[in-house]
Image 1 (tube, rainbow, N blue to C red):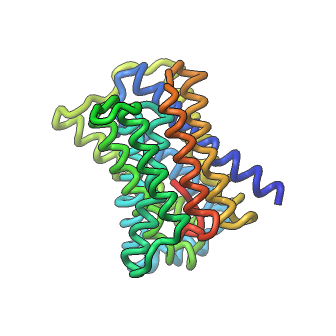
Image 2: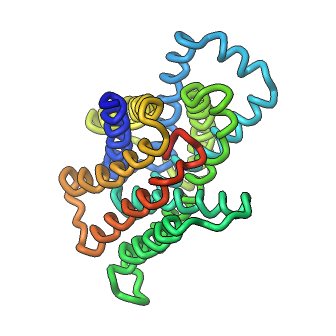
Length: 306
């Protein structure tokens, strides 16, 4: 059990590290969110495929032999994982790693609302309190306690909320795929397919003049990109999934609450991002929301939070 708790905590913390690394690149280099997303997803996807080919070659063949499975994997990778990763990095660019990760946590609320809507059930009291905590948290961060005044960029708020919605899609859609094939193989293949889409989007943006590929990247930039791929994506998913397989989805979801905390602390200590009292209150409320929503009722994906 201790091994599972440690693995889940380290995995979630590494997700927070990836957000801080993305902020470092966006602030210090002429680099676009689509480039970071493409580099991150394709690099991690290749690593996942290598591991899967070595450990589960027969299952990989069976998965790609079924047209319906391939279709679902494409939807998950291209529509779920890619959108989740791209909107998150874009949100970081307009805000910072800590704020973007907190806004991303609204995905749990959207998941709860969608589950209640499609299941035609009313939310439990804990879920209602969690929804209220999430709304107050976003309000604190966006307005800094000044009613009627937006103290963060409107684009950052919008991209953060959109990111939360894509998290809900990413959480809910692959449930049956996870049940049949396991989370590691589905996530790995989805990561690779999403990476291919990210590369296309990155090239298209450059062709239409919407962004440019970074002309000069020094050794620090490549080291940070490598950290995002190896630790912030590949190791983060692998460790967190391993931890959840030991401790269960409920405890895993609660342990995942360390992600916004890790992103915030790293953003403050490493990048010097200044957070106000209202920001910290918002962060605490969002973590409280995660506990309220997940403590009695496991999330519907049963596996992953991002």
